[in-house]
Length: 77
Image (tube, one colour):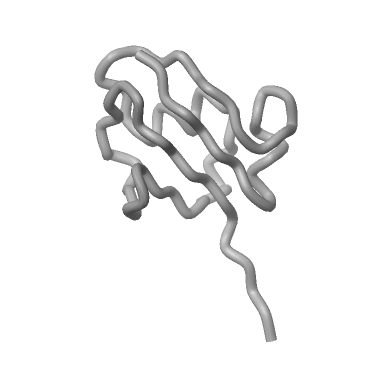
């Protein structure tokens, strides 16, 4: 299976090349939390995750061809 991952803001360091968009081969049945583990995202980092344009939790099962968007929440004032 393959998914497309798009990393924004503070999530770019976890992309294989430090860039924004990349395709990633994953195991069938992988969940969002397992994808974050595979990318080396530390447990104390809690990114906003969207799959195919909808917010997703760590237990969301990924499907072949999904587009996963990752970014950190920003604070402003």
